Image (cartoon, helix red, strand yellow):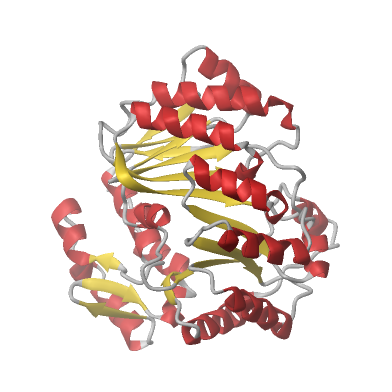
Length: 377
């Protein structure tokens, strides 16, 4: 089964750390939704009729859409793609958009999974990140989501924040556990060049925490969530039993997906494409019935390296048999010494023909994947 992602490129204000594509000019939102519907029709054949089991509204801030707009997009998807009987339909949402009324309307529109961008329960941090909500709104949005009948709720958190010590971080995690969400995503704060923090860093006004500090806070998170009954199924993602994010897991399992909207990515097993990150250019192109995408046909090496990069971050790891059968790569032979060294240093194990990183190894997942990358012949 495949997935569909729709990128909503609008936000009320710019968070100081975010480098995703968005605009704070909301005047074009209605026109953009119309273009999404047209692109959904134009992209009808991209996945070759494969069934769809996940739909994900990401951004930007998808909760800025009205329930009517969400409903119209879902109706267009159902008309043009073979959607499964019970798809996972996720809406990323900011706490300041989640009144009781809007939550009920989102649920009635078809949303069955919420990803709430809390980031922190501490007002000082929220202000410095330039978030639009405060801690009280964050708490109320979660309570309202439960009252509205949502039973698959994910909470987003950020760690490795320069002014946040380990005790502050533990307080955030403890408060998150009190709400008992089905899923938790936690991301290390990274400083991207084109963000406010990136500009401040160039001016010497902002300094990221070092890797050891970030690793310590991730380790604290893993330990606390394990005691709370959560499984770390990917470096940044944790869930209670039965609540893995199917949509994101499809990415990590090398499943196909279609991306709709400016800056959205798509992958069909043969090629990868990336829509232009410009709202007006996107709208003009779609009006002309042209997908404004850069297309890259994937080589054998591309496919192997992307699979290594994503699967090494997960609890299920790399399927060694799959690499051998689909790509002719015997990792145990070609990288025998490197895999042996990783195992000897407690960074990895091999279980039932799967190469899996330990907790210690997952802290180095991207570096290990890079070391294993296959170079073009």
